[in-house]
Image 1 (cartoon, rainbow, N blue to C red):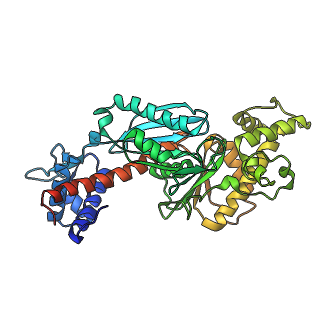
Image 2 (image 1 turned 180 degrees about the horizontal axis):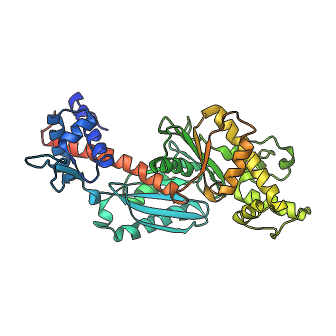
Image 3 (image 1 turned 60 degrees about the vertical axis):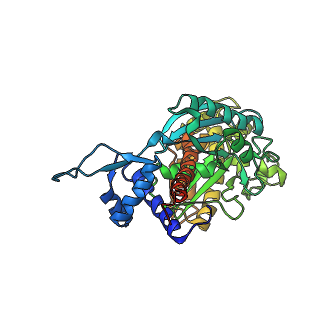
Length: 411
């Protein structure tokens, strides 16, 4: 934000309040009087600021209406112009990429899923190519794209513009992904951890808690933390890297294959990730535990068999759920979330969530509520759209007021 006088800064803050109200409270139309009541601003202030936003093309007069039972002229209703601007949200996962376009109300208007290419550069270029293709089919086309946000499977270091600990997708460490995508897409682009964005997506889906955690368990394991209603990234952006938690399980040290292999110790990812569960199950079968499944079975099949009493499958489930309960207990002792949402191919499975819940009951006097995600693969993508919209709305309001200042209208 460029330097502003006190009066123009106040005008900016108040304009953002109005846009938030029009967007979130009444996207189908709201009167100036209702905006004044919702924001606490005076009617003259609201009228002036709505005029600024209308002149900038961000809001428009909706179909006239009046309060129920009212008499006289109907109140003028204002609504956001949804297709005036578009944003892109994307999730670069270890196996799949989801790219979607949304309007100014956050409504997805186009999306596509594809296989993840073998390295970071190819994955980023795939996001660009799909974005361009989707925009061609949207009203207004590429010219209306204003902002983008992309989730990545690792810790994003903003100062270095690099991604660390993305063990499941090579090539991020020396790749300036934000600069690359900003240049290719032609709009400001945010980069964030995929599970952080999943937490934002869950919050936007109506989670009724201001303090909760979203734990994603698939090829890897990560956690997004919402504290006081806001995403918490930590001092260096690495908050929530739960997959790196070292476990007190000596027997796993010899079979550590993920992050724990670097330390000679087993981590949560070595026991509770999808590859680890398949490995532990296959080992159980090889060691003589009975099973109706073949070694190398998929996690969903392992969990289904465990629910039916399969010995080897039950062993793999017990190991994964016990390790996850240990990690969750430590998370709760530090952050005390009211709710933990499990997502990902492993985490969203109700059999797994129930098993973790049983294990957790023996570790905590007051365990949090546990629930599988209802958003599935779309959680990160929806969170990315949400953050892109926040950035876009702020910049659009600022641009509108900047234009008025240049005309000498504002102080």
